[in-house]
Length: 237
Ligand code: C5P
Image (tube, rainbow, N blue to C red; front, side):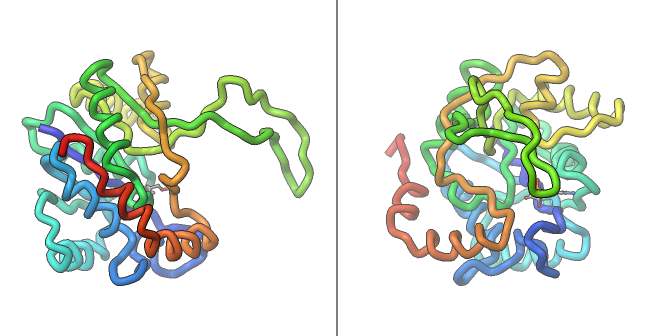
């Protein structure tokens, strides 16, 4: 069984809106519903657990019902950090889960083929995360001035969905929670505990909606036929 864990308990500070970004309406549906609809249709994903802010649980449940999303087995209270939220979701996942996928609620443009690549990667290697090589020059900057050049060679930008054999993710998350260590994704969490993490090719379109400009772009992309096509493209049909 493949279970998707969806952290959706952020407050969206960088978006600067009162309503967290995952609940903002994009066309006719909240952002998180666009994201979940893709996994709902994906034939290899069996169940979904969402971690969200307690006060939004009734809203999430109502919108899932409206959208006809049936794979969600639990909507649980998330935590103070993304990692806490993933951990809470994992604790409520079906015990027969063999593979976990973790996907940010705020990446609504993930494609069927990327989900497949990640799953195949997990089956082959035990772990798979999507990543794209960095194209631009990288620097560190503070107060509007750059102060350090960063090495671009072998640098990648990491996305979700990230996939893992269930026992590996469970073991590492439990350790990190116990050790009081925080990671911004599961790939670097596993790396810390000396597990091998394989990469598969990510997608430039798999945007993480973070800033107001991203949301404006998403409003245009959601209308775009090519995005619809990419989302629905299924390699097994
Ligand atoms: O904050 P960031 O952009 O890294 O959030 C990525 C994902 O993690 C979002 O879907 C957000 O809702 C989620 N998150 C969460 N719990 C938190 C913080 C973020 O589920 N405490």
